[in-house]
Length: 249
Image (cartoon, rainbow, N blue to C red):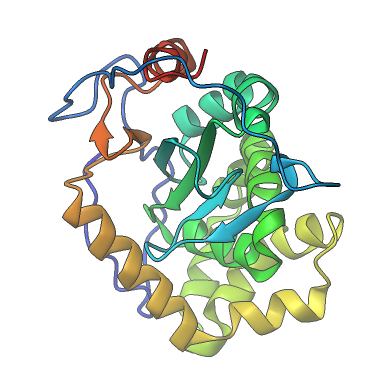
C-alpha cells in the first residue's frame, strides 16, 4: 500500500490491510552490497551487542554495534502482516548469527499506516531504546489478536478517534487492549497513558517518520536498506544472502 499523510490529531478511519506484497521487490531496488568477509567484532567487556540499542537521528531504533560495518534498516509498520512475517522468520537468526557478531546492526524505522500503528509505536517508544525491538517483535507475534480486537469493535474505535486530541490515543489503546498488553511486558498503565496523551510528541514522531520515509522514497512496508542502498525483496530469504554478500560471513 502507498503511504499517505495522516492527520494524526483528527478523526481517522481504521485500515489494517496496509502493507506491501512480500513477494515483490521494493520499488526502485538497487540490489546487493558486495564486500569482503568481515571478522566478528567483540562487544564491550561484560556486555553483548544484543543489549546495546539507541534511537537514531532518523527516529528509528538500532540494535547492536552502532559502528557496525554492515547496517540493515527496515521501514516497518506494526500493523503490517508482512512485517510480522519477517519478524517471525528473521529475528532469531538475525540476532544470534549477525547482530551478536558485531558485524551487523539492525534499525527499525516506524511507518504509520493507520491510527493503531501510532498507538503501538508510541507505547513501544515509551520504554527504553533497548526494549523497542523486543516489544515490536511481541506485537508482531500477537498481531492477529491485536488487530482482531479493533476490527471486531469498530464502534469503540470510532468513539476513540472522535475524542479530544489529548485523549484520542489513550482511548484507542484502551479499546484495543494495548495498555494491558504493554503492562504485561513491563510498561505501567500510568506511563502508557502519559505517553499516549503527549500530543506534541506524537505529532513530532509522526512528522519525522513521514519526512524520513519520503526522503528515502519509501512507499510501502517492509522496505529494507543495506548500508544506504535499497534492497531487492523484503523477506528473510532475500535479506540474509544480502547480509552475507556484504561481508557478514
